[in-house]
Length: 366
Image (cartoon, rainbow, N blue to C red; front, side):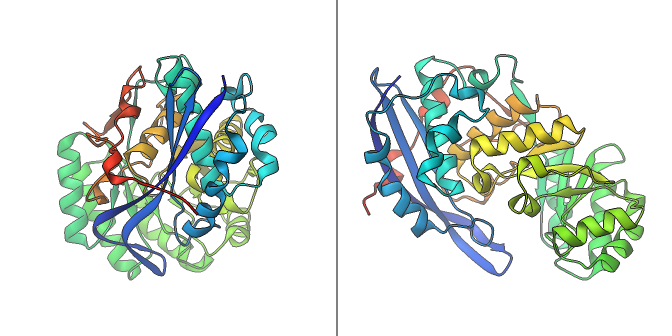
C-alpha cells in the first residue's frame, strides 16, 4: 500500500465552558487533522492536538512539523505488518523526530487508512478479537453541587465508573465531595480520583486516611513528582492504590516500575504517540498493572481512535478516561461520538471514521 496524497487541515473548536489546565485556561480546542489517501483512493484521518501544560510541543511547533509531512511521506509505501505496533512505526518514522502529538496523528491516519482499505473498524485491524464496546469512567469536576448533579445524571444514564478531580480545593471540601458522590453511585460503582500532583507526601497520607472509607479504586498522581511518588510507595503502606499519568512523560515503557500500591497507568496517547502508548499498555499488562487509555480533550475523531485502541489493547475490561467530548460546542464528526449507557460502542466498518465535518477544517500551509 502506497501513500499517494496527504492533506493537512487546521481546526478550532469552541468549548462550552472554560477549561482550566493547571495554570492555563482554554476557551477553544485547536489542532490539526491529517487526511491520508492510498492508491485505491481509500482515506484515513488522524488528529493532532497538543495539550497545553502537558504536551512538550505547542500547536505552532506541531504545525511546523506537519507542513513538511506531505513531502516526507507522499509516494512512500507503508511497511508490512505495521499494525502490530511492535516497533514498525519507530523504524519508519523515528528518523523524522516528530513530536508526540504529530506521531499520534500520523500513526492514526496510517492505521485508519489501512482499516478503511480493508473495510473494517480500526479496533478489528488492531485485534480481530477486540471488544465491540468499552466502558467509560464519567469525569466529575466542580463544586459539590455540580459534581453531585453530574454524578446523579450519569448514574441514571448507566455509568458505573467515575473519576473525580481532587486537590484543587481544601481537603475537607474534597472529602465532602467524595462522600456525596459515593452516596449517589452506591457502594459498587468504581470511583477513581485524580489529584494532578497537588500534594506533598504528608498531605497525601492524610488525604488517604480520610478517603479510604469511600472504597476508592486509586488516586492518580497524588504527589508533586515521580521521585516523591516512588519514595512514598516504598516507605509507607498506603491504604489506597496510586496510578501514574504525568510520570509516563518521564519514563520509557521499559521503565514502568513494579511499585508497591501501583494499581494503574493512565495513558494519554496524544502525549506519547500511538505506538508508544500501546507499548506502555502492554508493559503494564505484563506486570499486572491496569492500563487506562485516556483522552487529552480531543474531538470525536481522536476519541474514536482512542476507543479503538482501548478495545484492542485492554479488551474493554477496564473503564477508560474518554468522557471529555461534552466540553465541545462543535465537533469534527457528524454526528459526534457519544457515550451511551456508560459505554462507547464501536462499528465493525470504517464508516464512522469517514464522517468528518470538512466545513470546520481549513487547509493548512506553513
